Image (cartoon, rainbow, N blue to C red; front, top):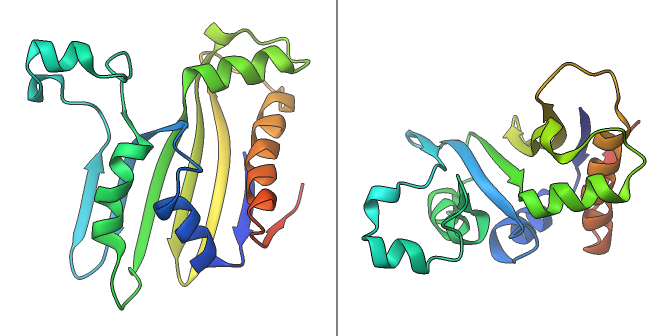
Length: 168
């Protein structure tokens, strides 16, 4: 796992909740603690849609709701005069992004070896940390692909001018 502490929390939250910068990710889950606690599962409830609507959805092949759709709902729970006590948001790189990264890398892994590339965003004790990690279908000590995945996250943060602390 690779991790970075976000220095400019407000700027990062604007990026996360107010722009499409992370819309290539799927929303896996969130736990938000404000005046009460919310636990949100990002799995798509297929039975919510009738058959015609389901087939017309651009994300009907996904297991999880796209972040671009979940983002506004999460924003409504987090916004306010007072910061949440804590929250954890888990995003998963879309399969196309994961496959592209594997193909660009020098990794010996193939796309079927990867069950997910995850971005964890944790806010607690007035600190915000982002962690990137890869879930494999087997045990491996190889970290090259994980480092490359997190470097994409670091590049994104830099491109939006967000200050952070990151140590390899």
